[in-house]
Length: 347
Image (cartoon, rainbow, N blue to C red):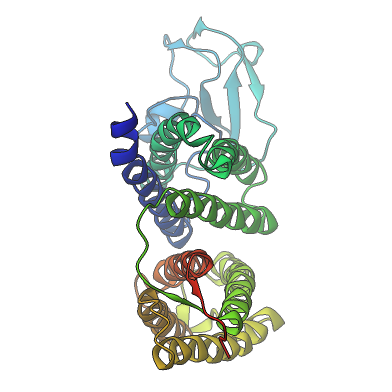
């Protein structure tokens, strides 16, 4: 058993990390396609574990065996079956009650299945997290933080699922979407620490105190950028609702959040260029800084494409997904820095 855990624990944690990032990617696609309300309820979808594919399935049907919790759309409103029953020829409101969480009552099969796949990937990501959390108790004597953060990750996933429900119930309230995104990043950080702490062999790297400090600043800037980015995206969503898919007009009148977001990008670039240069000049050994710099460039390119070239296909989800991968790499580099060799002078 010990040999199995030593061999597979980190691989299971890495699998969980990949799945969490797939959830983030799926969430970005949901946002890009406007599919957030594809399933009006949670955790089911129109009351079904496998969502409907045709509109008639969420319309009233005579002589049909309805189960408690099934949702239909009637007179542009959602109705929920109170109990199991067989319907008569006409709708009897005594068997139904209005769905009160929100008043969004539309059906689009594509949106429904995009949202359903997003939820399905989220559920699948919980499986390896649960497995490595159980296995983490084997590390209790060696490193209690592996066990503690593994358990916290499980509860974090539960909290994230609850946040997902509140996002749907609020009809995609922007501030709840932001909290949902930040929580996903926190879960990524927990898993990255578990992967780092269970690592047994470390390559030679040199600790540099100023590099460590600036790296923390870079991580904080990345998080602020992500939060600001969700606010800019909120403005875009509002424009879509107001004027439709006239992309050239989405950013005709940007909010202050956009200008702060754009200004911060210069600071983010400068900070990471310094980190990249210092790592190279002093041979600190953090090869992942090359990845950080690469993702910074991709972020800048996708940002330019969205603003100056009217949101080309996939530029929006790529922008937010790359940002979450970037902050994950930065955090892991910081963890590796903690285990680096401390020289007598790092000036």
